[in-house]
Amino acid sequence: MSSVSIRNVHKTYPGGTDRATDDVSLDIADGEFLVLLGPSGCGKTTLLRMLAGLELPDGGSIAIGGRDVTYLPAHRRNLSMVFQSYAVFPHRSVRDNIAFGLTTRRAGRAEIDRQVAWAAELLQLTPYLDRKPAQLSGGQRQRVAVARAIVVDADVLLMDEPLSNLDALLRMEFRTELKKIVQDLGVTTVYVTHDQGEALSLGDRVAVMRSGRIVQLGDPLAVYDTPSEKFVGGFLGSPPMNFLAATLTPDGDRIDVAGTDLPAPAALRGSAGRDVLLGVRAENIEIAGTGGDAPAGTLPARLEVREPTGSAVLLTVSAGDRELKVSAPASFRADPGDVVHLRLPPHTLRLYDAATHQLMENRPS
Image (cartoon, rainbow, N blue to C red; front, side, top):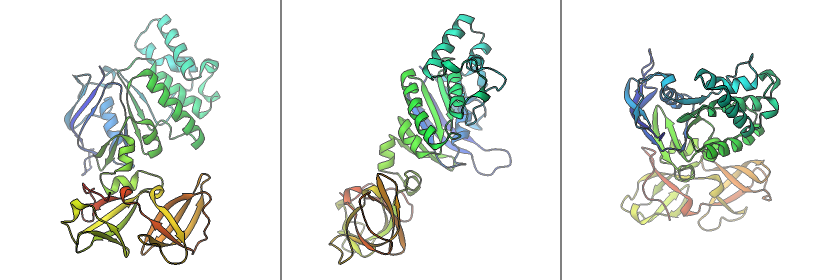
């Protein structure tokens, strides 16, 4: 078994005042692909390095497969790690780079040859085994780093932004390959990234981090669809979730947003007059028409910018003093300055407390 259990782990670097990780607890199942997602400085890499044994926590505990490894050195944890930089040895051939971990573990020559051949075939490196890294592309060098990590049969595979140095097209291609490889191996994997696309496409679960803490943990699509707080909605998604200030009307039956009334959920009708934030994704906003009088229940807005993206067109519109992002069909036609009427389907709205920015349990339905 190679499950991971992290309990109340915290770390403060010398000279710092804020904790790099702050009382983090996390369970990762055997064979699970877990993604740590968050902006720079949120603590995700520090958490990964403590799991790897490259940093020691100030408190808390870390267990792998039920064994306490909190203060064990890295070489006694049976982990493999792929770094952001390729970290391949420039003076060694591809073959010797892949075999490095097996060699340091003093595996037999037959075992090394078998494992290297298997990993090279899996990662499409067989024709390049006798080349040096300088003769490879960036994507091929990253494949070498992944091959080196998987041949040692580690309990847990750790990856620290391994695709960030690749160009956009290669990153997308390698992401698909990487997911298939990890699925085939069935190895417990912890993957650090600030790229939300990677997080949503790769992870069985995503842990969103902020200021050293995990603020939401769950299935990628559930985290995307129902962010637990404004920060998560504003970080996850391209474009991020839109937020509109709104108020529950005095009778509690409606929500007033920029002069437009929307139905309030029954469970919130005891909070009449309460200020809220409405969160809505760009792809969930419907365009009910352009120009003329606004249809009932729609929000009038002024089109500011139109950005074709191929399969759709991304609109930036202003509604009152707020700008919204709207994803419209590629066939949609309107010019900057035109009035567009937006419909916000109630079931797609997420309600957040205006003061705490936390998701309110109930939402329009």
